[in-house]
Amino acid sequence: MTDSRATPVSVRARRRHVGVTVAGSVFALLVLTGCSPAASTPPTASATASASASAEPSATPTPTPTPEPTGTPVAFVCDQILTAQDAYDFNPNYGTAPAYEPADGSLAATAVKYSGVACGWSNQTSGEVIAVSVAQPEERLSTSLKDAAIADSQVVPTYSTSADIEGFFTVVDGSGQVQVFTSTYWITLSSPAFFEPGDAQSLVATVLSNLG
Image 1 (spheres, one colour):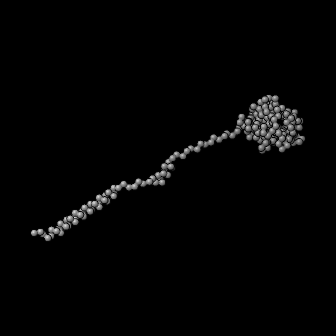
Image 2 (cartoon, one colour; image 1 turned 30 degrees about the vertical axis):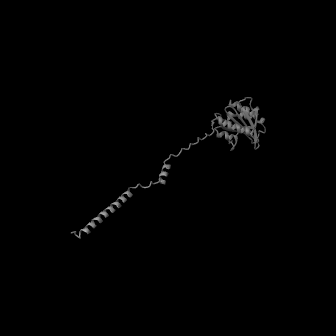
Image 3 (cartoon, rainbow, N blue to C red; image 1 turned 90 degrees about the vertical axis):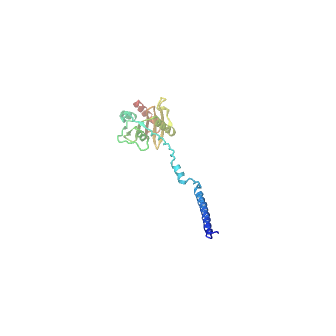
């Protein structure tokens, strides 16, 4: 004879078995889901910026400055360049002008800028001044000064018979401007007394002789 209470026990046992099986399946699903690989993460903007920032900037070459033109200090003083007797021989009315100062922008002022010497002799009657300057420019500066003289003045071949000496003349604001280039010196003479190249001829010859 079968015990009527055995049926509920058996049913409960089967229900527990089914529950365990379902639970196991859910757990397995959860485990499988948790182990699935995550989607790959794209590189962040900060990583790209960091890589760019780490690159060394290219060095910009520094231009080499062009050296300023210069001149060698002249070893002559005014009464060696043109003596009082030389001035008298040119015109007895001329004597030294101790207070002479070269005008800004003049040839004599340019000569002083490049370590040259500027001197003045004054006509004691008219007050006209003859300005004489001597500079010893380095080669690049001498070429630049000569190019300017060629552009602005007329060539005067009679200032010297030497092929190494070049002379130029022009009139600026009523004043005759003489420039003479030797292999060593740049010589200038300026005066309202010079109307044409020949007016300064004897003085140019005297200065060249005194400089040797």
